[in-house]
Image (tube, rainbow, N blue to C red; front, side, top):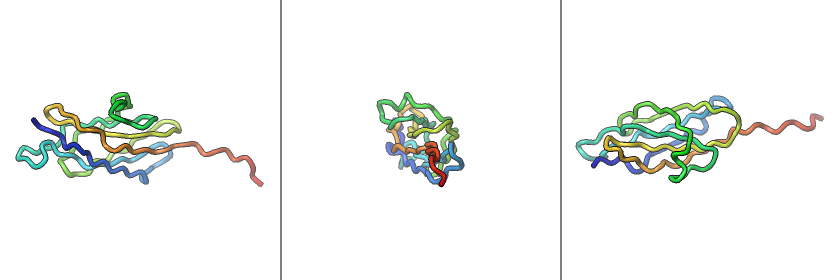
Length: 123
């Protein structure tokens, strides 16, 4: 049975904030059947965000972000997400292989988009 690489390498470029409510995330595309002659790309990703830390228990309740078709194993994947409002966001991703096997969640990235405090004294 094909297996997705259990650990998704999920590198978050939090410094790539284009403006107050967007973030660029990047990760390395995993392999389906790593090291075997049948090795190929994952079939799909499920990238989600939530306003609280993401775990296996709450992953499927997250807001899904479309990612497109996975690239070949080892290639860099990048996505810029526009977010609404000001809040604290957590992001995680899973990959699935051709047999329907899902990976574990990646590391959980987080980013704050909080409004600055109003100026109280301009002396």
